[in-house]
Image (tube, rainbow, N blue to C red; front, side, top):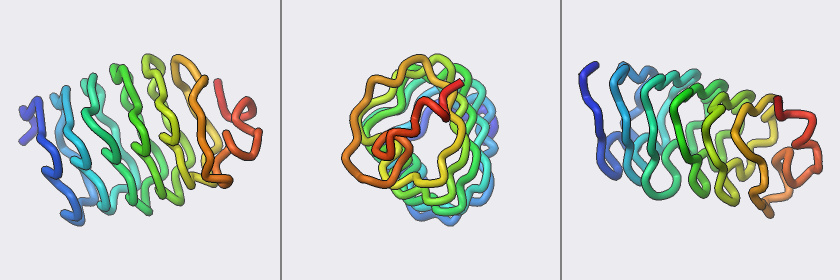
Length: 133
């Protein structure tokens, strides 16, 4: 599996994965990794997330790193309740990407002009500037 470059929509939805060994992954579909048990995700070659909710409901996820990622789509990390850091320096962020990510402390992204209305994330709490590096 390390040579996989693309996974489709719902590819690993609720698969109870704790680890992602996709070092060559460049593209992931809608809900591709939704509802899994990752604590850390490091996808150094990932460029594109298609659709929404790619990593939503990964309640154990604390760290997400994707240095080549161009987009963080709507609700990408929705309800990742333990997410603390997102490192994606080339990514533009869509609205509600961090919905209910109330533990988020560090974000490294290209731009932070997205909207959210969850009331729980740093954007809604007006603390986002404290997170961005």
